[in-house]
Length: 299
Image (cartoon, rainbow, N blue to C red):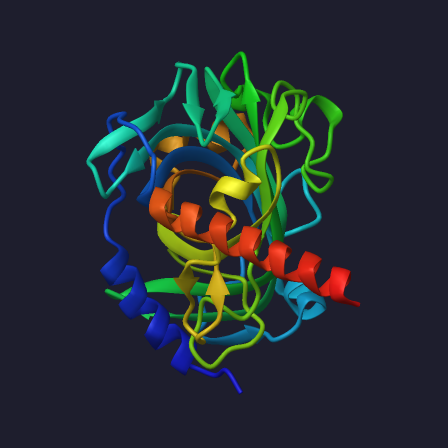
């Protein structure tokens, strides 16, 4: 069902993503938004350099990988720190790392840090891009949680985080904060014609430099009502809350020297309702309530 068509499509997508540029702070009220962050990632490697499909199930991929992700039983997990939240419609920035901000009536900061994990490779194919062995990995599952904290994250603790578990979504100095936003990677959203994959990545086997992407659904946190909009149409026509793109590498061994696999920069983009739309929705709900009350009285 998958075969090599996925690798060809992923190569094209990787070339389109391009570099991720950190934003300078502004402010978010309505319209299009971009959340820019950096993160340290623990990932599974070692599927080999010989071309071909390596596995088509989670169990098969676990058996095929020579270098499982450190500190987690999944294939992708890590920690993140948000650098900025930008309103693309107005060109303003609502939040910049190290400052306290108010968004949708919710005050947070000065740091927004998070934990993600639970992404399991279920389809892996090795090919060649630019003459170098390249690995495509499609994953299922995945969760993330973003907290408001007094201090920034501390990646020096490594993926084991002093004994806590990325699988459980806990990490020192992060998960003790106030939950701002939590959610999941949306299955069957990121690849056209595929009803399973929640995250897809493509990387150079030698340099571990690559790109990843996936759609997100927000499910919890104090800012849930603000971001849970189902405003983006995914690759299969469904609706999700946001889209994630990631660019990662381990230049000079900065990440691996403290136990991680790669260091990443990433951005999440999405839409939030215009104030007028929110007002209209409130009026519609109020009218619906009035109709219901009249019907109840007539009954």
